[in-house]
Image (tube, rainbow, N blue to C red; front, side, top):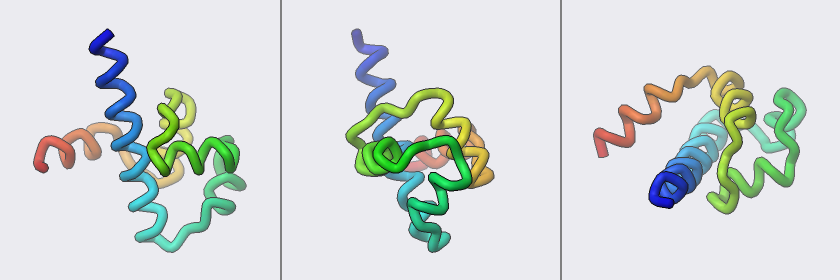
Length: 79
């Protein structure tokens, strides 16, 4: 359904945004994987927009980067 399309699109956007944050902060994928429960292959797919984020992965990654979903959604609306 349409809801699934939106979810996938938000997941992709969020993954690419997280890649941007990680590179801005000079953090390696290995560091992220070591300090969260997200495995390397999943992180690679998330950051390249090829995998939808699970709620658990979103939680781990947002916590890790000290981000909140509302901040990300506000930035998207500002575009």
